[in-house]
Length: 196
Image 1 (cartoon, rainbow, N blue to C red):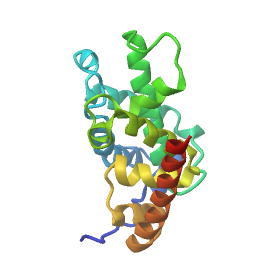
Image 2: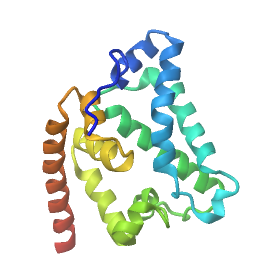
Image 3: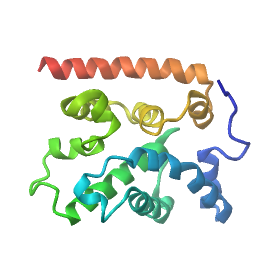
Image 4: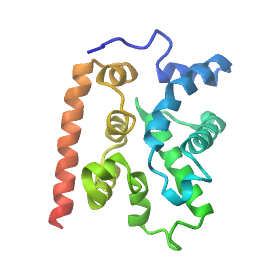
């Protein structure tokens, strides 16, 4: 297990502060950090009909350009908020791509939008099934924002406990314990949804 933290001045929060102060190098460092995470998240989420026109790399680039263009308006309400913001921006780019190709239903009902993060063939859908993936997304949305960010960092962006700990200024064990509590809460939310 590697408990190494990013070099001093390299956490996402510090890179965001440096970027807002006008440091171009901070933008490059931030993009190098998050682009692989976004690629991993986006991989397999595009429906086959859309993959020719908008591959994963294009989708990630659109999301990154949107994030950088609006970085001055981003408010880090809690540690980890940037990762939830990245996920939402990428999800919005995916939705826009689907709308452009008219693959999105005429009326954007909640179930259709909730299903997008687990596009057919995604690892999430493979693990949970289509209904389970939709239930996961709904349970995620019912968590407090800081807990959503924790789940996104660990399970959707594949960050290790030490990486998350460095971002949140917590120990890897503290992150693990916190995540166990969050997953228990998500399990309760999923169970409550099944009971309805």
